[in-house]
Length: 438
Ligand code: SUG
Image (cartoon, rainbow, N blue to C red; front, side):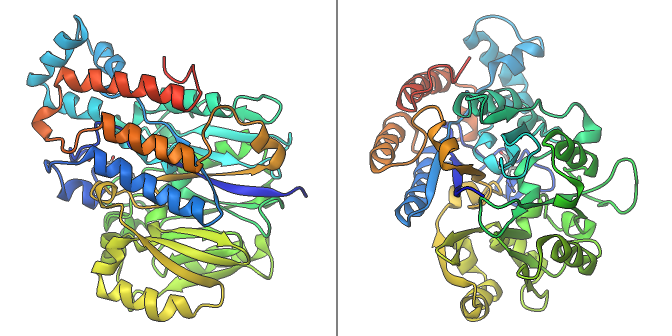
């Protein structure tokens, strides 16, 4: 075993952050459709969370936003002429306008699934970008996600990159449905893959909202990453909670090291899921289960209680929760009176990420966890680990380039595309990643 660290790489919010109601099955996205957004506040809220975690002694990375509006999408659909002409045509194509401006790439928990080198057959860190096939505005993230990951994790001695999975049988939303359990981060881990439905086996499926992750996608990823069978546990989300707005498992569960924090209604055959995890992880694995009588699923979805980050500080864990949890009495009671008593939880800290939350993205959606050894950290490319300096530079960059407010009718404005180009050209210099963008 070698010393390894969990690094949270957070998505830097892009300058077109807006509320277009694009995600069917995501309650917040539907409820806030058409509201004005603040890209500047959204990005600064995200950076403040990153800074606070870095200040606590955790390693924190940054993943860059994508170029939006995404012109290759529009050109592939037959819109022609120069960029202004293409954007001008969107006046009569509101749906395409909204899709190509989405800043949804900020939720990097959906960017990829990752296996650390301690777990893989060839001893390298493996990355599979998510295909995000269930939503058009998300499916267009794949090319840039793959490019960004290859730019940062470039060294082939340590990092292996797979292509996104090929088709709808393998609909894949990445780490939002994946948790790795381990004693120390450098130990071999157990991969917990949670899916919404199985295409081949049939069985239970949600009735109203889509199941965005298939079992077959995670089986393929386990094969690609060279994981042994006894390192994997597959579990199905309870279809009833998908229908209640739990569109990813990270809306109802979070895990870290040897702890799973979850809701009583999260999985199909919950007792069997716990037993399988216990059998693979060993005696010190534990579950903190929130009973439905204490927190109903509707409050879990509204507050995003489980979209918290569970991070290790020394031997204890700290819950990094969205401040929206303070608006729900049941959640507040649970966190302040029950969870704080738990021997493995040292603290609960609240963060205001309301700009992201209004699109259904809490603290955990904004981060992609990558476990790296010290040698692998030394092999990273670019200036992507958050320091005082990088934080100050990024805050200044956001303040200069981002709008305070973005109204839905401003989407399609070609000035916004020029602002994106200016901002991202400078960002690729700041992050010292010259080939970041095409
Ligand atoms: O895919 N929302 C994202 C939120 C992703 C949250 N991620 C995790 N749970 N890990 C989604 O539904 C809304 C965009 C809009 O409506 O404008 C959106 O894409």
